[in-house]
Length: 138
Image (cartoon, rainbow, N blue to C red; front, side, top):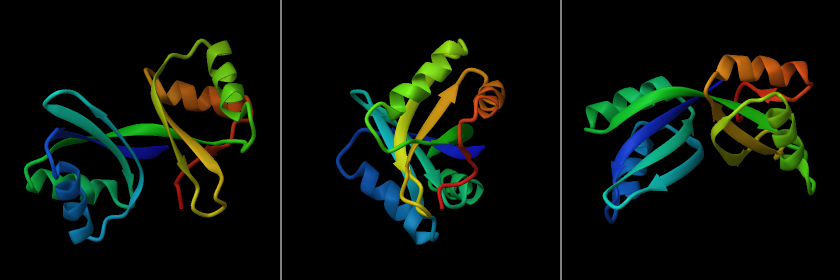
């Protein structure tokens, strides 16, 4: 299971730069990211090299953040690869809260990161159907 940081950040000019600068100063590498915005604030979701340390550093620098689990699924790099995964999830009656793309650094394969209502059950279900679950993005 991968750990993800969910960070509550202001939707202002330079906010992402400040966040990334903070992580770089503590030698924390961003492996995957997605940002959802609203008028004043956004949620930045990151998979990083050291999630526990990143959460501590960000909290010390005034950010509200929490660590959550996400499932990393290695994708087939072909048309319909994501559709195949979504069909397995749909047929298993699993609801996806959100998903976003990344890649595996070791073999450059596409990866889908996903969050569901019951992450443990989802991981178990996907493993039982032969889906390739990743423990890290390196």
